[in-house]
Image 1 (cartoon, helix red, strand yellow):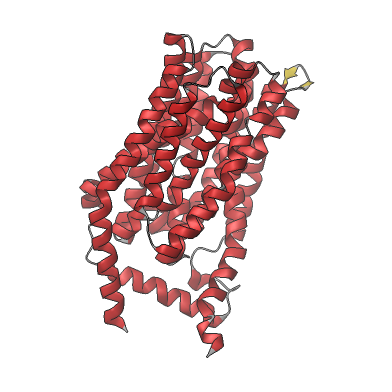
Image 2 (cartoon, rainbow, N blue to C red; image 1 turned 60 degrees about the vertical axis):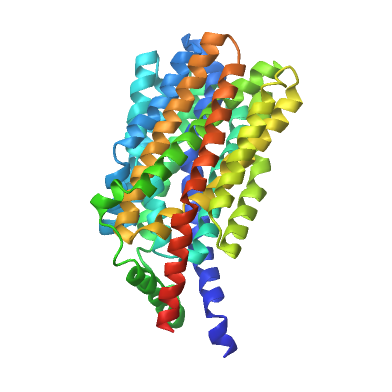
Length: 437
């Protein structure tokens, strides 16, 4: 009896140990190129003569390329192979990422960043689809939290690496070029490893004992059964709830990606430290966010609550960014408030990303993940570009901070409109489960 009662926990722990460290590593590798281009800009913009508007547009155009394959990427991961799609993404973006280190003009910067976005498109939806093949709904928030901690972790890792590489000058290439060239190599290696290491679905997992494999397959089959009456792909893409999720993420990632891309330059301008020190300081907000993100994912799973676990972090981010507007003459007050904003950005993910699977069926959810993340990518472009444009127009950081603060507040407020739909989905799920026992 005790063995049977411990089966869910035993299975989840084994799946965690096998999958999550590798998936975490993949996302760290993915995110390093977004982090490092912000650190590279500390030298790149001056060396190549880029204005804030040029860098903001080039940094943001990545997300326009990223949008192109988001929806088909999510669907392909569901109906074809998440493992193969993830491997393809890693291999292509590894090559293009390294080429960024050879740019000479603004136009080359735009094209290489756009191409990198196209190459990396579909990665997040594919991983989220993959996790839905391995985790029950009640376990998904924590798994997603672990996955998304790779974002702040990559910034914690990327800061010291950038601090070191920005000092070098090898073979006639300055440090910012080596920073961008070298970041593509791990993606190439991991793309090959992915094909052999990741298992497509639980029924294929020879590393799971028979009782654990059968139990997990059965639990996930129950989830598919309860979603059989849910919307088709076409209907999901025009579902008002999905469109509302798109708006929530669009606004949230305006602030998230805008601040992430510009963080090293923000710190440089409020502190006037050298570029190596700035790169190290820029890793502090993400380091602070890591434990809170995991805690929020754990608590969201434990309570089953998703809306407030999304809303409150967004409100924290908005409040912190608004307060930062008034502290730009104080370096460490600004770093503290940017750290609180970063905690808010990343703590919102564990509550937000389980929502599509709660509201939709499997394939419809896969398509909606692509659409939602496409709008998030559009938000990444808007936030990155608007901060650069507002910096040039106003001659300072204040206007941009007010913009991203407003986006954070709006994102947190909009998600509250989904409370009724989520409550209905939870009730339906409980009734379905009760009818099976």
